[in-house]
Image (cartoon, rainbow, N blue to C red; front, side, top):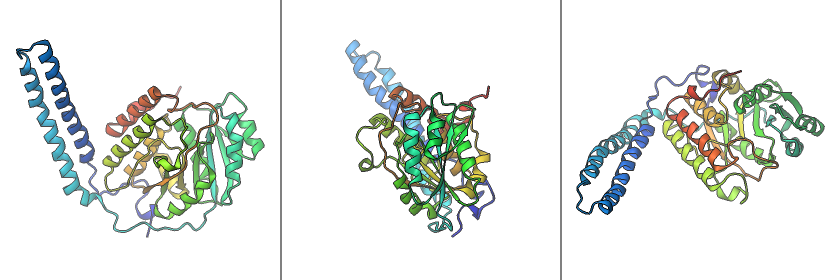
Length: 343
């Protein structure tokens, strides 16, 4: 069965309904339910302040106005699941497009990863399917580049700051090699391991992009930078993204930096991406890939404590909440307001 080359480059299926009724139904319905819960809480507060109940009309007013978003949300969910979804499921069979060449190029993003990058490079170079390891150094102020070279990596300097810029550069450089037809994106902080490449290759015939997911409890160590809040936050945002693209995939993790991509698809997808999206780039990458008709499947991977300090969205729960809210805004409305201006 044909994979990414079955449709015009960078073009979504024109016959597939694009309106994300399920996503908006869940959001609107949740807003209505929230209003109802607030009305219940307000009722107790008002009765405590005024036992005669002279202000209970305010509770009734909120309940009355909460019914509309609840009913509208339910209607949109039903409309998407029973009317639009059969038309959105345009795939008639399981994609099966075996790779002619299973050797791959690994691209590691790095920023001040002196303590971990050498071990990460050695780990990936030890895997029998890895032809080379590229390290994209995004303005590190330590010896990241030197340590990566000493470990055997090809080092590329990306001077424009930002995670999105680093990822686009990494995938662009990796997809240029003619002796490999797939590229593996990862970070150089040792949170992921090369032995999961075998899992990626098992899933590769089924999609253009295989996205690692850290959501399987048994496959992650107990002490990582991924707190319980971040763990379920990723799952929640993943499900909203799934609702937006209902019928195209099962999504549970929008923050993972470990993914396998076909080079033939990267050459079409990368020009469609804006590299100035920063820490939200992984969710943005998945959203844009599905929007433009590329197939994506998740693969469970192991997750380990990082070596060194976290510098991205996992520094603390407050930082993670900010990144998560920006992901939600991009998924629901538009990524354009989140794009950082170049200096």
